[in-house]
Amino acid sequence: ARDADGSGWYPFVWACLAVGALSLCCGCVGYLVVSHRRRSTLEEDQIRQALGLPGVVRFPLVVMPADVFVELRGLVTHEEARDAYRMTICLDDYDAAVDFFETDNRLGIFFSHQWTSFATPDPSGKQLAAMKASVAALAESYNR
Image 1 (cartoon, rainbow, N blue to C red):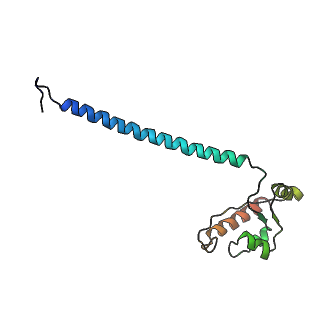
Image 2 (spheres, rainbow, N blue to C red):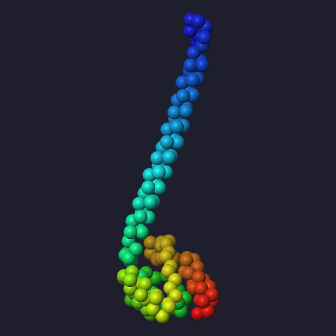
């Protein structure tokens, strides 16, 4: 397609396509930048909220002696630990937890785990095995 003076429309079409492609790329990059900033802002808000609640215990802290823990055959819920096992104490308050561990220079190990099924916390036993290995290593390093 050529116009009356013999020049073609092709350069114009290519220029339009190039501008369109560049606009599309800029739009995609802009979207990614805005999404990243939004995610970062949400993460920062979550961190600020967590730091603003240093004295709040949202779930009870179940404390049991290491010798009882290493004899467990499977992970149990904190309710089961509270009701059925020879645990030292169930702490619902941050200050009580700090006082408990400062008394007699007690060594505490905090374990958090992910439930890997709907029925039991750790059906494969992998998490419990890792926790027991950690207890053994720490006991050895502290000569306890």
